[in-house]
Amino acid sequence: MNPSLPATAAQPFSAPPARLPRVYAWVVFGLTFGLMLSDYLSRQVIGAVIPALKEEWGLLDSQLAMLVSVVSLVVGVLTVPMSLVADRWGRVKSITLMAFVWCLATVACGLAQSHGQLLWARAFVGLGEAAYGAAGAALLAHVFPARQRAAVLGAFLSASLFGSVLGVVLGGAVAAHSGWRMAFFVVGAPGLLLALIYPFVVRDYKTVELTPEAPPGGAAFQRLRVAQIAREVFAARSGNFTYLASGLQMAMPAMLIAWLPTYFGRYHDVDVKRAGMMAGVAVLASGIGMIFGGSLADRLSRNHPGRRALVPAAYSVVSAMVLCAAFALPPGSLGLGLIFLGALFAAAHGGCSGAIVCDVTHPGVRATVTAAMTLANNLIGLAPGPLIVGVLSDVIGLKLALTLTPVLALVAALFFVLASRSYESDAARNRARGAPQAA
Image (cartoon, rainbow, N blue to C red; front, side):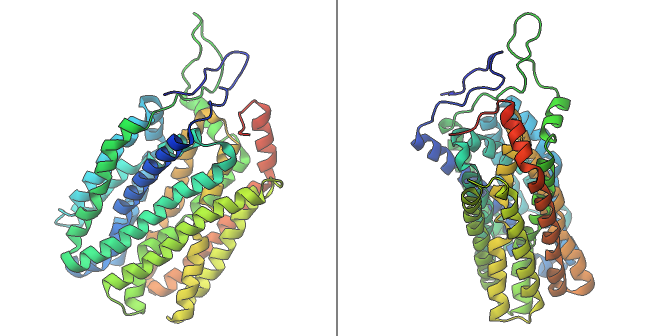
């Protein structure tokens, strides 16, 4: 089934696809969401086993942080080139191959005999995950109408946080009973089954072309050049500010996922299993915030488009203020409650950011635009965030490091405000070119 309609010289953009059956759309969502869970199970289980690795191998906090950040670093470096490959080779085939790579690499983590071996295995986890978020988001943007864009993309991205919860909680429980190696084996397995099913259920779609220019001989379209794609991806001022804002804000959930189990163990004096469960509640709050944050932004900006970027700016400010206060307080119930509240807003911007960049850029480069967002998220926030905390922790202690790092969210809020100043004009220019908008 390929519902895309071919573009013509008289119609610069492909016409919107025929309305897909709702059942099929939600099946695609379920499978794609499930693989995102597996992705982050594999990525974030490391947070639950950090205490065991430190005890067994005597690692510094900065070395432990490298095991967290290397995945995001590899994802950030490779997401754009691998997304381009996925657009040309096929998104469904690419997703299937990537899932097999990250699952098998996670199993390999459990076989590592040294910090170096584990670091390499974690790098291959990142290799497998590099283009998954972009390819998965592009598929969902195709099968759901644009009026649901922030909500659907927010729900899809929330799988990263729910997967992180499962990774931390399940990894901590398994590590407590069967050792840290078994934790990697357990979380690496579920994605293999979904990877087997995926290509038999999900159909790929034809990429919308960027230009209607026909080469001599009558062929319908020329293949896009990399320079053309790059110009389109970074053409909108509001989109560029959103890349920076989203990347900085993603440092918040990244540091919470990586360091909360250790923080609870050191300062709340709980065992590995309970620390993992407490951290899991915080990350679960972030996932809930991401779902409802996107939905709320859709509602608030429906008749006031200028709010599209101001809403996530507000989320960033709240997360910064609450998390700074939470970690500055002495360990106790008040600080714990503020951690959960701050976590609720830490990733609420996710669906909003994806919707903004889709609104202001051509649908023909939507997967690459999503990859650019993934690049920014990983290189600006997900990779440096936990590493910054780890390096600061070695110097000033973990508690003070976690107190200072949320200031980055205030810078993210500033970039969201700057994005709001040009969002409406960028979106209007995109519509004027003929970009299809959902009813």
